[in-house]
Amino acid sequence: MNANGKEKIVVIGGGIAGLTAGIYALRAGFAAEIFEKNAIPGGECIGWNRKGYHIDNCIHWLTGTKKGTEMYDVWSKVGALSDDMQYAPIDAFYISTYNGKSVTLWNDLKKTERELIAASPEDEAEIRKFIQAVEYSKQCVFPAGKPMEMWGIKDYINMGASMKDFPKVMKEFGKISLEEYSKRFKSPLLQRMICDYLPKEYAAYSFLVSYATMADGNGSIPMGASLQMSLRMEKKFKELGGVIHYNKGVEEIVLEGGNATGVKFADGSFVEADYVIPTVDTHILFNKMLPAKYMPAELKEAYDAPKTYPATSGFQVAYAVSTEFKRGETIFIEIDPIRVGNRSFSRMYVKAYGYDPVCVKDGKQVIQTCLSQTDEDYEYWKSLSKEEYKSVKEALVREVSKRIEEAFPELAGDLEFLDAWTPLTYERYMHAYHGSYMSFVTTPGGKQIKMKGQLKGIKNLYIAGQWTNSPGGLPVAAASGKFAIQRILKKQRRDINL
Figure 1: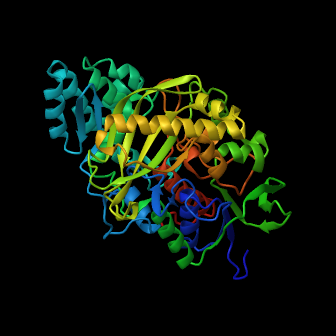
Figure 2 (figure 1 turned 135 degrees about the horizontal axis):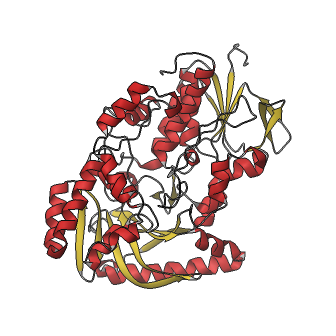
Figure 3 (figure 1 turned 90 degrees about the vertical axis):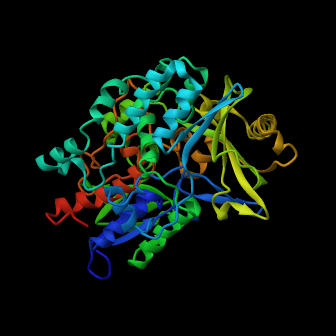
């Protein structure tokens, strides 16, 4: 209990899941304190400044921007979105290029269909199937009303009615990888387009759902960049009476007789709690804050089988270039291979942020690039000494810069280097497992992780965060924070509608 006689919820981590849990805790009448190891809120939903330019590090598109969806209701209640929110004026998912040709995945599916058929008439039948599958995938809307273990018959009936065509997508695309799917197309350009956005190991339906979210208007980009969204949520939390502590990382969750009694810090200090909600990376949770024996079996299975449950990260570089550079916001290019450790990369993207004034200064905009990284790449970075790490980064930046200038000659001499970061950056700053900025990759051979939020043997601890439900991401993080509070309310036999 706090000084006002309210039950106190301690939240570990001030990222999107932690802020959401804190806000919903306050809405439910609890006292809430958040302990965050870094100096700012947001977790991985942040950005930073270099040379006066803002580098956005998270939102490529945000699921739940369509009014009337359950996820929009969550974003609204936590202060992330509002009815007058301005969104980036982007009309396409991305552009893929190869051998001097390009195709665009427009938000307008009919426009995409016409362009793809014109680019590869021999693939017309497969293209039409692709567009139909994306149309069906619009029905796959993230359920954020309440945890599925609280669903009744009516909820399942409603879901079945609203997703009546989506099972067709899962039947055909749920058990094949993007790499397998791409081989159905004859065009080398379309083959690359299918594998560009998500790692080729991903189950094909994941890509279809991602594109459908954009095409349905449910995946827009809020103006102001990722950090500003996190700051809006922090403001809401504080306005409701919440307390957030920065530079205060939790070392241990203290257990007594099957209860989490509070949290302990590096200096030995202790904070008592009626309920504890850890929202941190589960690898840190079960290897540092809690005994490993409490790790759920499904999670242990995933960590023990990295080939079936891979993690994904990136080697990324940011530059400032003229705002006159406009080739589409996200464009994938074919490059002379670049080696990182034992692997070679022949594709990367360039994303321009000139649509948001936050990322523009003195007639220049921020652009970013990414070489997708895997568990193997993480191990390579981890094997380097401090000096080697710095040297490899610098060499890779030179190679990446060269490839960008080759692909876009108008940028020759205009690239102003701002920053570069690796999977180890995410590990250091966020304690992210293998530097992953999502949860486990959803592969055809893996089961979808769906943790119920409670651990056997601990009565008053409720887990939230993107690792509770693959493939993770911001909507999973936010919904899990809400679900944690609803589970507490259910236990107390109170109304879960907040």
